Image (cartoon, rainbow, N blue to C red; front, side, top):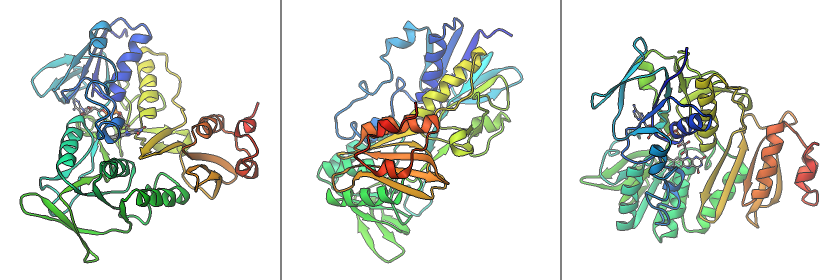
Length: 407
Ligand SMILES: Cc1cc2nc3c(=O)[nH]c(=O)nc-3n(C[C@H](O)[C@H](O)[C@H](O)COP(=O)(O)OP(=O)(O)OC[C@H]3O[C@@H](n4cnc5c(N)ncnc54)[C@H](O)[C@@H]3O)c2cc1C
């Protein structure tokens, strides 16, 4: 069956990329993106970095300028939410009542912030951070207030902590687990980042058990089960994200911690692909299914989804990589640190320039690099090609990392 009509639900990183890749591949049919935000598709990473520090604005974070969409005959419907997919008639219906027919549908609905299920979590002054609107509210509020509590010592919480500390704010991070970014990085990096944040004035409390958020008209503090009280006038909750799967579930697509897709980004309906944060996909680097939340995955999987629509896809097998900027520290990771049984450090934590290599049963599975972009680029090649240099040569900084690349 020929494909004349592609509809994309969700105008974020992956939705934009599906549309752009279709046009790059010479697809001549109609392409419509429907997004529930009012913005031209934009990058989210600056929302917890440059944007908060007033070093970026709404226009500078756009993925492409406004005219890109008309120039490429991509119809962009903003500020409208898709409420229903009818797989029988191959149509989608939006909140405003628009009905669109598709030959192929792409679902790229992303995630939303995981809410905090605690008394006081709905008070004014308690923020989440996912969208441009969230970031604009947060930035305004940070400018007006001094004492900030961040619930969650993951990437977003720590990036905001570093920005706020840089703006002279009093910042406390409350992390439930015993260490920062515990699911994503090694103990070496967790300890390093804790010391770094403390050095720029951020107070870090790990193993924190929050009893409730205090306040009447606005959040005024956090009570911990330990009895400690932390007064504040602004709280950012950064405790993870939930995949936006409800639309897919309602349409009867298979979902399990994300929309289930195969290695070609195809859902349980062959006419519907899905890509980005909302998918749960087979990932060779995870030895099974995985849901990734990263720009890399959104872009690479969207390219596969677009190729699937055109019938030209090869399997998705990109090595996962990610970055996080926290103050003057750039963290870059590649691979997935699942089941690490040996850690090897190269470089110097004192000099704030090092990489941590994760091995599992002698195989290199992930590398995190701190202020070491050169190491990261080599590590990407090592992980992508499945190379496992001997730990002794990796830790020896007189051995050039590049020389350990096979071939
Ligand atoms: C503050 C922040 C900082 C980040 N920093 C980094 C970083 O440093 N490095 C990195 O690799 N990644 C980072 N990420 C993650 C990265 O931005 C995401 O992985 C990426 O945006 C995923 O793209 P996506 O298209 O899957 O989802 P999104 O970009 O979230 O797009 C999904 C879109 O679909 C819309 N939508 C949902 N349901 C519907 C519906 N029914 N109808 C219409 N529209 C709908 C949503 O509103 C949204 O606009 C960060 C994320 C945030 C929030």
